[in-house]
Image (cartoon, rainbow, N blue to C red; front, side, top):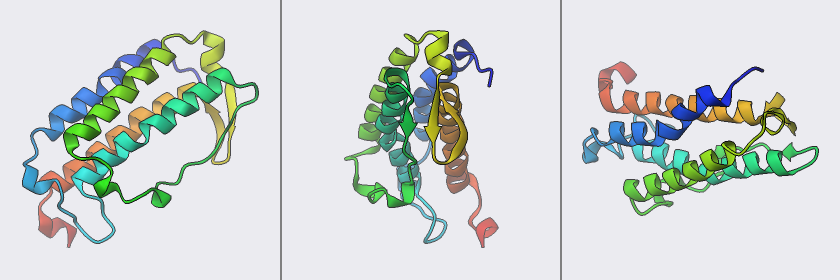
Length: 159
């Protein structure tokens, strides 16, 4: 998998600010709306994104620092209730940005060999830092798409 870090890093670096800017447009009375009992709210999407950043940094560090690294799968359904893990959206964004800065700092130190080092992961046939970086970007944009649905899609569309 040929993924040059210099192409991905600017997006990874700025994504928390992009998402925060977008979220700032959403009226606060919509942050806790649910489309159905199984759906997440805008707040829960943001809290989820923030809450997994430490785990992602740990994965980057494990791959970087370990011989023959093994990564344990993560299942968000087993995660604690999202709505109460931060005091506010602001607090969640502070956590998100703090860990993103740490992630970027580690990524900037990697050699090409470090960057392409393979790890074992129970869910994936290939797992390395390029996969993690791409996954982080795609995952966060996927949540943004879901947030946009909550905010902008007319309710009758979901019935």
